[in-house]
Length: 220
Image (cartoon, rainbow, N blue to C red; front, side, top):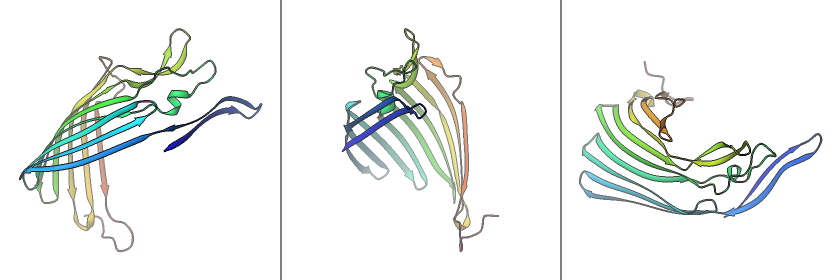
């Protein structure tokens, strides 16, 4: 579809227009998905996508997952994927006087992901999982300073690589209540050097259940 885009930046008093950018662009996406079970314990999932955007041109994405289920409640997965993020209108067209300018030739970000996971139900209502992952981003879109004039500009930066381990567990209780926990050990390199403002440990804990009249009570 032809999508209109509008960016405006102005002062009310006194009335001054700093930016009035109006344009429209066409985008198109095609998607296909299939699954093959070629043995009793083995399944292959495949996702393919083709996009056309003015910023990235024609670009393909894919994701495949090889799944092994040796017994009920146990599974192992190897997952690989490639995707992209096209620069938005702000990154491509926004400009502001002597502080920010439009970056020429801004390309789409790309990410390549690889993951190996194992899940096992250790007891009724209790599941644990362990995973190893690696994510590599290239052409990272970032706001930078152009040394010749000191103006900020969106530009593509070199590779960013994140790798680590992830542990998760999920417990189900009576009356529809469930608790989930996740802990991630993470190491990130940017442009060949460690990223010091990136977290190295991330934890999440959540509890959910029914609510409203007639819902069961919380677990004791």
